[in-house]
Length: 313
Image (cartoon, rainbow, N blue to C red):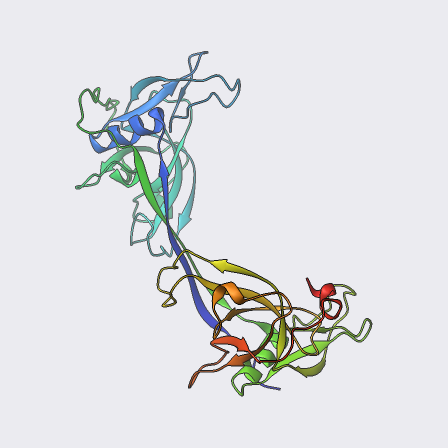
């Protein structure tokens, strides 16, 4: 049996969102080194501000400045900062209740070590040198020995308000396809398609998952399927994907390979998009050095009868 595969994978995309009047004022204030909270009907001040009272669901809009100093209410030490975190050196994640606020703000505290952090520690904001209207305008918090509360001034006229943000989302992880899919991928490198048969219901699953999704039992018996198959369902793609060098429109389809009891995905080529149909018989087209078919093309055979693939829709 071949060694189980594994590979580093990254999922990354920019998440763009618009801001309501309260969040817009909060981020615009940070750009001007002002921290704004919002006052509820019963007099509590919430930082970060929200547009609706989390207790009563009442809409709240009264913005009030709070201090740039505060108190650590709870914390956890981060000995190994990751890419994109506030500091490159070890730091504490902490909930900081700013003076004048009734709720705590999550941010980083720059301290020389965990022994220098404690619940009740007095801290103050260290502002970023360049501020754009984001939570990162607060570079971090730092321990503060002063006795006086540092109150921020009213932001007043602070230029163009911040009306939207772009938050990059990224997930780095190592993926292992497991025993069954490793065998499937290894077979593809030899231009073969291999599934696994359930010992109970006798269905052949491609790609295999190592267990039958219907019976819940392990699958070990390998079965070579295809290479030809039948289009069961399909869609016409009219929006060009970034970094995908395929002209639109094109067709993406579910293809039931001969001998398989589960349809897999594949692009259909070699035929005008408006001539692709259910029941179309297709075969894989490989490119030099590829580990999987580039696309599937018509074989020229008569269309498959609906009764032969209806259970695979």
